[in-house]
Length: 139
Ligand code: CMP
Image (cartoon, rainbow, N blue to C red; front, side, top):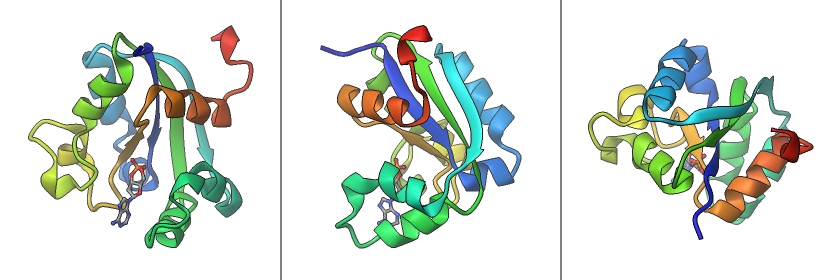
């Protein structure tokens, strides 16, 4: 059953280019409520652990280097059908394939510098949210 929460990160390309406000505005206008939010920088170890599911992929090293290269904004978002609706809002992983009007179409530069992360399942949304925020039941 779909839950009503998802997890996102605004990635270093977007934070570095001053897109945090624009991205959060799109998230709010699409009906998501911010449940928890953190502005931080990942160490290589933390980025590696967060993306461990991809460790056999050829782009893993690049992904870890990139995600630890600058500041990020991590957030838990709430809305009915949150995981699927947020993936629609952000668009395809590769911004050249993202639909018009999606966050990645507007703000992303490349497949690795793709502005935002969005959880791909309810299970991963809970795991990823727990990675950044403890005592989630408080939120
Ligand atoms: P994200 O939604 O954060 O989840 C995994 C990330 O890996 C993805 O966004 C991309 O930024 C990155 N990624 C996926 N495929 C590739 C690829 N072929 N080359 C580089 N990075 C990739």
